[in-house]
Amino acid sequence: MKTIGVLTSGGDSPGMNAAIRAVVRTSIYNNVRIMGIKQGYNGLINGNIEEMNLSSVADIIHRGGTILRTARCDEFTTEKGLQKALNVIRIFNIDGIIVLGGDGSFKGARKLNEAGVPIIGVPCTIDNDMGYTDYTIGFFTAVETVVDAISKIRDTSSSHGRANIVEVMGRSCGDIALYAGLAGGAESIIVPEENMEVDEVCKRLIQSRNRGKLHSIIALAEGAGNAYEYAKEIEEKTGTETRVTILGHIQRGGTPTAFDRIIASKMGHKAVELLLKGDAGKALGIKENQVIDLDIDEALSSKGFFDKEMYDIAKILSI
Ligand code: F6P
Image (cartoon, rainbow, N blue to C red; front, side):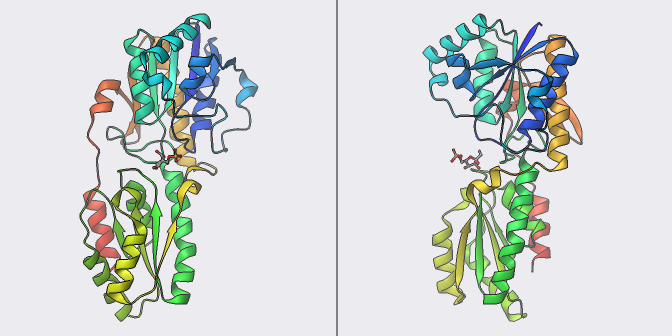
């Protein structure tokens, strides 16, 4: 393998830059040419590709976002788009591609692999919704951001004696709400994976209010319902003023945590090693602190994992 391409695709996640750095530096260490493909699969279709060197990735390990930029590319899902990309891959003499992204990006990578282009997928998404891996790159940074926000909202929640719903991202996965809810001491955590009736949220709120608690934080995963409807119902049923904060894209930015930088560095390095060994069509992940690899098909068909035990602990501790 003489030339490797690297791209970031889908929603960005903190730690993507650390992964790009690892891919670029491991490639150069092995005397392999490394090409940066810009704006995800768009760059493959349009030939927006540049050779990278050691300094292209200097001073980025601590930066959020992605220096390669990213996009969700509808054209690539069409046969015409795929053919254009294959043509560009031939023109640039790219022998293998490392795709950094979530499951949508992995589906694109699988298409390339089926068309004969060796690929490796590195899981990057704040959602942590890829069931085959314990953690995805960017997840813990997003959790830190949410915990920081919860701590700030808790101050004003106490001052006013209000309930505050904090809506977090995650699509249909409740992990950001669960982890940040536990770490932030939220009184209730509402996630798509578990049924939590509004009455139970109200009961918890009233019980804690009766004990003299001044604040009440409700961590709500975006996939579990509408924050404003919850707020209206909670306010009506408890008489406690209820405010909504939708954290939104703030969760996608910021300097990556040390953990995200470390797993990004390890997986970026491993991705190049696998391609050089001729081992393609793989997805990387983290299990019990070790980097694992498995067929991308298997990764894409793995069922989501929700930590019910952690959810139950959070419920007990937040009483
Ligand atoms: O997949 C990452 C994510 O941030 C989700 O949590 C969220 O639902 C979605 O992307 C938002 O997408 P966009 O940035 O395209 O609005």
